[in-house]
Image (cartoon, protein in one colour):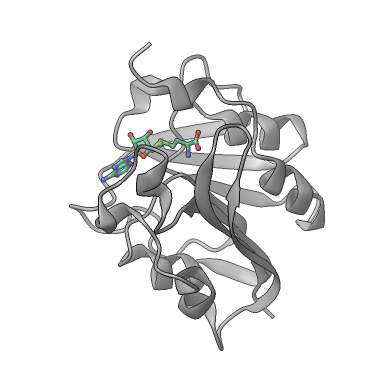
Length: 172
Ligand SMILES: C[S@@+](CC[C@H](N)C(=O)[O-])C[C@H]1O[C@@H](n2cnc3c(N)ncnc32)[C@H](O)[C@@H]1O
């Protein structure tokens, strides 16, 4: 397997916060990969859009999931004008997208984000600073725009040792 991360179980952080999303709402999984969160969201009764630059990673998507292949770092934002009840991003960072994601939330919509932070280079990949959040960066990205329900900036042991930040925030 060339992408070991694609075999992971759903993130505990995503599982913790998704129950606060409007039941039956529309949820976007950004850089969805093999779709571990899109599948979970579909099982929970949400209408799911999943986007990745390589749609072939997402094998046999369930009928509640619309998979879109798009390069989020090259072309225009593919969901212009759409508003979501939640946006989930895990293990992916493209800084210019952060304000776009905030703008793409419905009132009451949740941003659930978890990705690698500075210090992760001690544990392995990603180690390129472009893909690692600076201390507090995720919190600052939503400051004044979303109500932050929870933010963590720490080293975790599971599913493997990593420096991460994670955020759950709501558009009021
Ligand atoms: C580490 S994987 C995370 C996948 C998934 N979010 C998860 O946590 O299981 C990063 C994903 O970002 C996608 N990706 C990287 N650059 C991208 C881009 N420019 N546009 C869209 N997706 C991209 C990759 O194809 C890959 O599926």
